[in-house]
Image 1: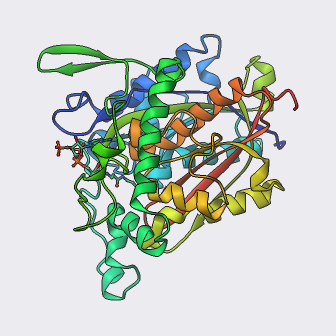
Image 2: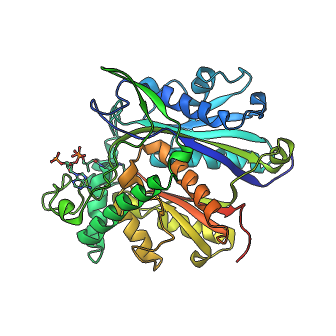
Amino acid sequence: MKSQDVYFVDGVRTPFGKAGEKGVFWNTRADDLSVKSVLGLLDRHPDLPREAIDDVAIAAANQKGDQGLQLGRSVSILAGLPTTVPGYAIDRWCAGAMTAVTTVSGAIGIGAYDLALAGGVEHMGHHPMGDGMDPNPRFLAERLVDPSALNMGNTAEKIHDRFPHLTKERADMLGLASQKKAAKAYEAGKIQADLIPVSAASPEGFKLVSKDEHLRPDSTLEGMRDLKTPFRPHGKVTAGNASPLTDGATMALIAGETAVKKYSLKPKMKMVSFAFAGVEPEIMGIGPIPSTEKALAKAGLSISDIGLFEINEAFAIQVLSFLDHFGIADDDPRVNQYGGAIAMGHPLAASGVRLMIQLARQFEDNKDVRYGMTTMCVGLGMGGTVIWENTSYRGK
Ligand SMILES: CC(C)(COP(=O)(O)OP(=O)(O)OC[C@H]1O[C@@H](n2cnc3c(N)ncnc32)[C@H](O)[C@@H]1OP(=O)(O)O)[C@@H](O)C(=O)NCCC(=O)NCCS
């Protein structure tokens, strides 16, 4: 085996739907959403021999029912990949797809693999957060974690407690900016370019879903100000500054330099470094801070070298805590140029690849930017960061 550079060749996703009976994907299986993402991705690479795919890693945070049959393998079979192509399921809750990418990248980097598919799916309608989980009673009995650590909204309220200068108004403004930036990105066709429309069953027949369902382009600060605070009376986290419950799937094609040359691929990003890190579970949202510090150190870069950031907006407060730590303004134009999870939704284990898809497209439009970052927080107190180099970089 020979070590090699690792590339994000391409990525796609399904539109994201509202979780629940009224959502567009209520009558669509999670594994079928994932199949769509695989087919949509491979359709963009008709000449790539399917049998050359060394592995398929697909994440879900809740691995049962229509997300339970060892997704990597079952989705590969359902997508019609050759039976010789293996696959596996992966889980790191919200960072599932990110971990799928970093895991296959490790295998590619040491030369064990040349090509892999990595992505995630979450049908939060079919699998509400925490459904069927049986946390060990020791967690609470032995005070291993604070009781609030098991509810993500509570962890966001806890960050507000810890950093009072990161006010609700700042969180609402970030939520509003996410909606406005997403609307602008849609107007410019930046999002649709990587969406795979899905024909979804509904009581009225099949409907073609070609847009994220949660978007609220007409949001106003006034309209958001007095929304209920579902996680705590008189709290700060609302539906306006939190990511909504979402159904959706993502998929990426990851390749080593050998495959890039052999199949004449045109990769969009080169992996520079990645890191995961742990923090106190009850303030899990600050996880991206140490994971970013680790990833920067491994890359030999500093935060000022990063020209574009894709930060998952699980909650506005968690993004604010990251920006505050690194001395970046709330409205820095390098951050989440197309908006984020507050506007588009956050189908837990799928979101990591959405961040990569958006960063890759921004790289194409910003050829003077060399490095970018995808980062996200993870339940039970973790963060993940991947640093990427722009393959379109033309120098300053
Ligand atoms: C915050 C949360 C509880 C809200 O759930 P919900 O109440 O079902 O959300 P809704 O979409 O119905 O919105 C609630 C209300 O806010 C309103 N609203 C939402 N966003 C708004 C906006 N941008 N502007 C104005 N109103 C808005 C809705 O219209 C709705 O109003 P209504 O009650 O009058 O109908 C839910 O989205 C949640 O749990 N999010 C976090 C998910 C999570 O933890 N993910 C993992 C992260 S680690």
